[in-house]
Amino acid sequence: MTVRIGLLARLEAKAGKADELAAFLESGRAIAEAEEGTVTWYAFRIDENTFGIFDTFETEDARQAHINGEIPKALANVGPDLLATDPDIRPVDIVAVL
Image (cartoon, rainbow, N blue to C red):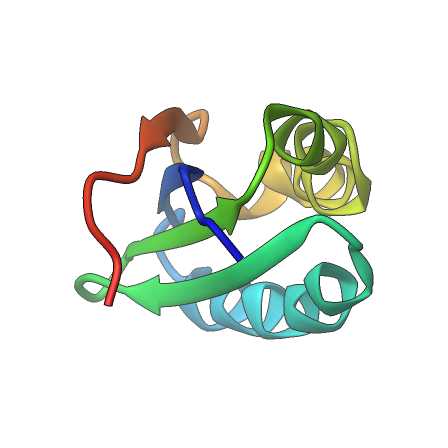
């Protein structure tokens, strides 16, 4: 397995919506687990209202499948209610892996 690329997303919860956003992210684990090309998927909390997602993939096709998959669709559905701003989603290149 050669993990070469990833996605890094930063999410800012609306005031009073952090727990709901955390629960949404927890539910995303099962969706990510079912994705064939997603090697790793992490959801994390940075501070009270700031969260993130970090995913890794072996191929660009797998990353594109994820970008067009169920998690982004679900996030688009809940985003207007839970997010203070649009998600900041960036493709990344993996430099080193342990």
